Length: 333
Ligand SMILES: NC(=O)c1ccc[n+]([C@@H]2O[C@H](COP(=O)([O-])OP(=O)(O)OC[C@H]3O[C@@H](n4cnc5c(N)ncnc54)[C@H](OP(=O)(O)O)[C@@H]3O)[C@@H](O)[C@H]2O)c1
Image (cartoon, rainbow, N blue to C red; front, side):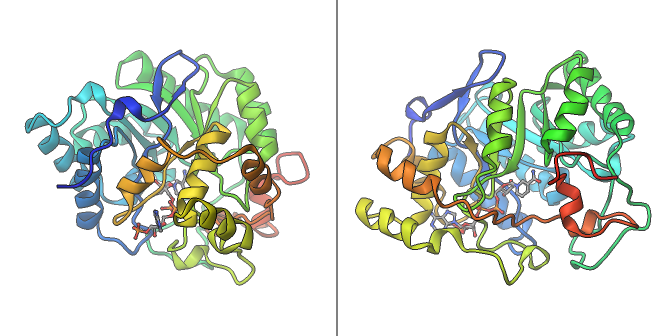
């Protein structure tokens, strides 16, 4: 019998509404390597290990299989729907049909409603599953405040209809946030962004906290098995840095657990994906915290190591992937 981590002892973060949610959820993106069946087996195990938060997405191609294991767990009395915090995302090809996309996710996930519904990317640029890094969609275009707000309004309507409880945004930049936050009627509860020791996005992290938006860190371990299209020769393997190795040795654990403790102590929700290590991942935030010195040491590891560069979303005329991230402080068009 796998170890059970009592959800009551998993530390919580407080959403802007005042609701407390777990500081860790399980990621469900198989990275084009782990089949939907294997991901759903891991989700079934994770629920029984004490996970209550799951980060899903329509484009991960496995909501149908994950929904079956949610239903089984509820039918077996392992968990009630209201104890789960289910997050999913509208994919880029459905920005004009958000309710249809959301309804499909709710049906596939068999979850009646979504707790936190993210706009996965801030533009409608679509790429096919398993595409290669040089593939470009001729319909891709730069960020537009009007288009984004049209998508966001549809999310606001879904809150009003009771289909989703909170709205999330993802893969944003400070200039884009500056442009859209004043236009929103219902503020976003959370923002999903890439966060790991060698890519800390401290400025955006602080901006989110200052605007009462909960940061949700994706790829918290530096995604060692990410899709081929997201692997570049210059990438750094976070967990192999001497500092992470040394701190891991001091705690007698794998560096992955150090990355997760750091994420938690920093104040994020982290959403590690795992088929083999999910129980130890959840357990690690309930015990043996990092010292202030260790936190400070990891704080020095920033290397600008962005792993999801997003090349496949580029539009005609864009220079390169840096254009997606508004690095000069203004929205690149
Ligand atoms: N919003 C977005 O645009 C966006 C983008 C990317 C990802 N995400 C979300 O973020 C989640 C996490 O990202 P990710 O899956 O790419 O990367 P990740 O969580 O950083 O890394 C996952 C990898 O780390 C390994 N791992 C997990 N725990 C471990 C441990 N304790 N010891 C050793 N290895 C361990 C896993 O292997 P095992 O399976 O063998 O444990 C898996 O290969 C995704 O699943 C998805 O839900 C969102």
